[in-house]
Image 1: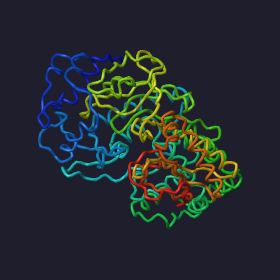
Image 2: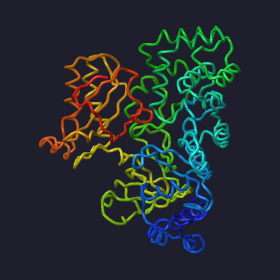
Image 3: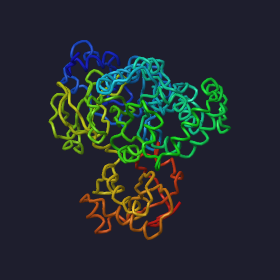
Image 4: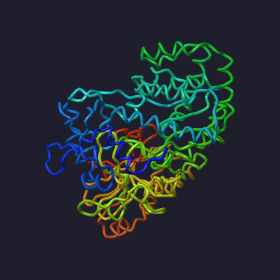
Length: 538
């Protein structure tokens, strides 16, 4: 089915009941019934509704979270809140969530699966789904709140959709929603080994999670083999519900334990681990673009000849596009916008920093080769909402644009006139990491931070390193990082000391502070860091 921009507006506003806050009179509320009853064209919509950021909508979202008794952003009450990445004025960033967003999630799952299954067909099997449903909490107004993935995993539609796609998880729900991440991960790996011949897909939300899971496997594989050999679950699993669920899965199988043990012993530096353990695995699936690209090298090390497929393009605010070209390597992944899961507009980069209301471009009016910020109207009360993501138009799939993710604007390293994206950070880390490679060491993980407490401000890069490096080597790495940021604003600011010397901090493997970013992906924090040594250790 084809949807024109006009009908996309109609669909979205129908489900949200077209209830919009009046931006001119904060606190008041205005029904835009004309948009439902009469006018669905983009011109009428853009004339009625201003382009907004999360900061503009935050007071309204907070009213929803606090339990407002009247409609705030939608006619149909919002029942769930998504806790998004980032903060709003130092507070958790809330995003409205409803059943319609769950349905669009299932729709994009089914759409992308159809393209994947045409290229890499699977038969009835199971997936080693390295997914974790974190705890939900209750807002002041009594609404359930959790991460976007948790809200999806807890919906009844999720399991039905996975079963319909012939990729049910090999792990019981109690493992997915376990109280302890490390215990759940251990049991995921154990379930995968028990079902090793049935596993056709290995997946997680992010590439980082898959890499972390198999790094963990390197440390616990002998214990996993022992569990399978004896049929007795490790004492490290203390969650009663998880132990009960696993007792229905785990039985003594000495032959399987010996088989796995022998395969692990024969591997060289764990290269090709995945196809050895899961011989029928067709592909590995997860978000592999943007800040996940640094993990591809290690993931390929584990994957051997098993294909890597990047998952679809979305955010806490909703989905944007599906990967309809699964044959492309992750670095070249493009996403076809699905016009019926939201109403999409695009802000040219030339308009991004202009004062006043920017001039947006419609879905079918974008130009190939140009970069834009995504602006979305979704089913849960976000109207002409600036997502903060910059994308490049690569081409068209039929009449809908195919996008390549460039960066998230709010993840730029910037102090004054310098502008370094997460891609710039990734390239700098890759360049400096080559110095460690010569010492037979590697950067296990990294994140970043802008220290504005010092004068002048400077970049702080945090590395988790696989072993001990000398001070001289670390100093060389630090110098290489500094020189690898080639943005003209950064280079000129460094020359005149408007930006101070870059600081590199080293943490032993497994000790990188997790509060610098969910799942340790590249993230910018604006907090004071007291220790300002150029090369520190932690």
